[in-house]
Length: 319
Ligand code: UDP
Ligand code: MG
Image 1 (cartoon, rainbow, N blue to C red):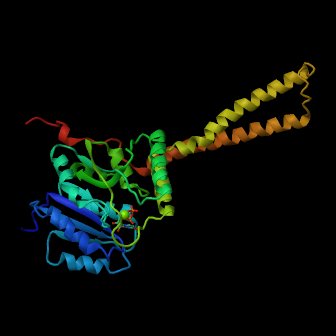
Image 2: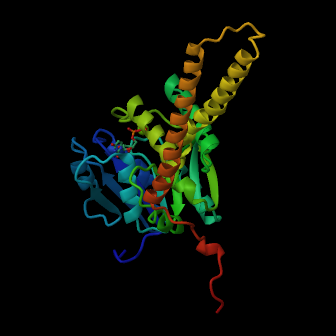
Image 3: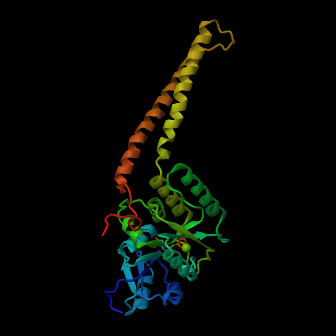
């Protein structure tokens, strides 16, 4: 097969210190996809400090179907996968982890659904026994909050075990934001999607590189890139405090002026406190206004396209 033939299927695999398991992973992957007439496997070495890169180079050998993109340092999985997606040449592009947690046997299912017209096929995790309490419930809470406070819709259990069509890849490349999660970007893009349920396996070798701290950062990054509502939180509180303190002040003044019928005995100190409350409300409100401007600046700096056209469903010209 000449190298000029563009592959039908690209498999993107981010690799960070996976030397222990990468060979086993590779052979299980090849066993599943070898019957596809034309595929490429793109390993993105994300600055591994073990001998993952040497192992990958040995695996690739003279094979044209294996490509290795080696990043200059560790950029993190999201960026590594982004690099892989940008460089993929296939019509269908799959992303999956190198640790064997995403069952490679299901790849044909993803491809089948793609052939039936889904432009995005998303692996849905059913359960992960080994996952800790914090990770499981943290993830549930995260999905709840994202769906509530942003216009993206994330389905609980959706993972980055995904297939995207080349058209989605082209749109993906127009999203230049720096703090990104690929899930967030792809979910924003829309397009026809379908789901493949799967049971995540336990990691086969090595340690999960995602500590609680990293997961927390990932969650914060997604909230911030998908939603600007945290910026308004101060404004909402301020918007309640300001009228409340004004009404309270008026009430206190009238109550004292008509001879303290409720026997509240409000002193000057009470009025000072109310004035302070009002000023705090004004401060919060003005922070919220800054937040509004920030959220606009935030949207501008993200530089997302205004819209994405689904070319396969549009008719631009006749004949
Ligand atoms: N990974 C990466 N860069 C990193 C951390 C992880 O490319 O900085 C890769 C890793 O080799 C694996 C995938 O991302 O293929 C998922 O990593 P991991 O299993 O550690 O995370 P989790 O399963 O907890 O999402
Ligand atoms: Mg993993």
